[in-house]
Length: 416
Ligand SMILES: *Cc1c(COP(=O)(O)O)cnc(C)c1O
Image 1 (tube, rainbow, N blue to C red):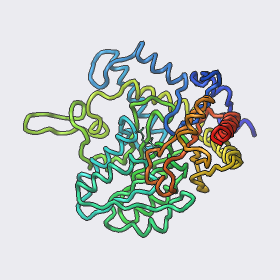
Image 2: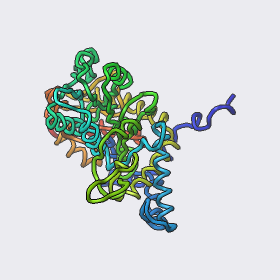
Image 3: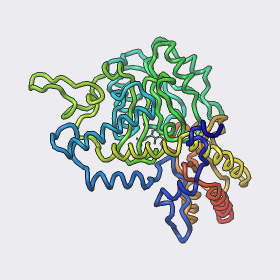
Image 4: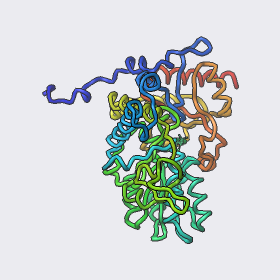
């Protein structure tokens, strides 16, 4: 029955071909081939994205939504096409539910302000989790401070999993917003967001999902999840910096107040009164990052072509192998051992501070992240000042994990 199979499903994962698509992966440092394991911070770009941006600036660039001439109309069309691409990627009900921001951080600030302003009042509560990125803590903390609302925190267990029984106890009719990440950038935990959303909705709260580490690695269907908000960053999904996505249910966008005001988001302006245009434009004041949006469209097309399920399966094999191999390194402890994890491993070594690990690995041309990963409460919870973190992307190989492990042995030898 091979002929009824979707060819993309039966296609083998062609890792060598994928690596060929990413020019930077052929670079060497200190005469050694680069091992790039900092995909949780940002991802490298395939030629399809680089070429698309180059062609756009070389041949097609003009402003959007204004000009009546061909260049502007073409740019407007390319810009609008990415909105359709993102709509399909997240399975949103309509493209007006897709707002372009400059990244996840801006998307969170937008929702905290634009939803918080009208809907969070004194005495209300906002719930975040103990494993949030600072970007999904501070904006909520600020809106709570401004409104006299209270921030509550879902605790996690020693494996780095949210404790849902404790979450249920925090929920009450006072809860306005629950803001949690899909996947933790510090621990790799995949959170049970469907259940988190369901429970929040039972008490009438809305849910914001920080998908910065979710969308690049897992299939997301915002309608099936029934989430109110979902955000991700272009640069973490093989696209450009300077662009991100906020998905929000249409009804919320209509009820929210603008985040920024200015050109392109107004209907009429007089010095007495301004009326605002419809979503998504109401939330896209000023000239948008046009080429970045077009580049994001190319990145999502590329991810779709490889197939997110195939990418997720490959990254899961890497995670499994790396976990086994890292556990053989003397004095190494993995921080975050949830049963559901994405391709990201935080660890500490007895023999060396994370910063030393990172510096010494750099001399092996291995790029990992060290530090608190913008998640200081997570570090505190696990009683570590910092961790080293290896995070995988679609192009990483088993050989690269062997190089990481060999590099760590070298670190131990040097520090001992
Ligand atoms: C990277 C990240 C952010 C912030 O994304 P920016 O692109 O820096 O705006 C927020 N949350 C998580 C979980 C992240 O990994």
